[in-house]
Image (cartoon, rainbow, N blue to C red; front, side, top):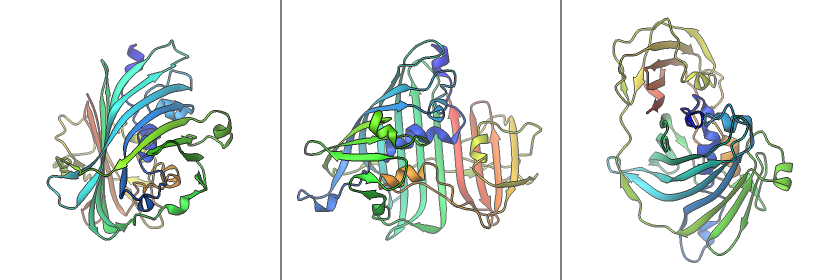
Length: 341
């Protein structure tokens, strides 16, 4: 069973599970036409078959064959920050059990996930900052947490109906393939295929089989504001290059290494083992938006950012790694923290 509890793989592909689940919270339902008033998703349950290699690797299941099944039972709640008047978002928590593990023995993983997505609104459809947190708590195993902050300067325009064109007759216009159908009153079924899978997945055996419960909107809960990011002083480049955030680095068009490190983190790093930095030329670059096609197909605004010119710095200790993009004015634009317990 020890192999089943390996720490979460250091890869941006954790969105395959975390954000696929998160994506189903907005499934193209026309809430405004409901006579009962505004509605929201309050519960999510069902299964996701990890049919792709990347979805297995994202949970550290590299040694097992594709096809493990994740069973979800998630409670959903609207939230707002107790320290930020215009910071609102959504929280998801609940058990995830992974079964049907084959290839390197058999086994089962029992875990809990907690996902938080918070946005700071500064005007009609304008977002200045975003915080995204994903915590994976494995029973009797190793836990991990991803914390991401994005600073949009100028603020990002994201009106509520921005992605309405992503759906047609309950199906996504573009891949990945998603099908939505009404069940009983107040419940909707979502079937879909993971990224990299073709349309026949929906015909033969969908990867995603989820049911969401829709109820009248409840008052949001007050939560503590995410930890503040601060610059790490007096950090120098090391001979060893950080590895835990390597795949995040691969999403960026980094330039030459630089000795001018501008490291930021949301926690105090003890005994930095590795530190490196690279220059970034943001001219002509496109937005980085993991899982954006899938999220847009589900009519859910996706988290994204456009790299700017500046410095990309990575620092890591034994149990935590922080990566940050600082622009040429010294302002933090993106911060990513990965911690393992």
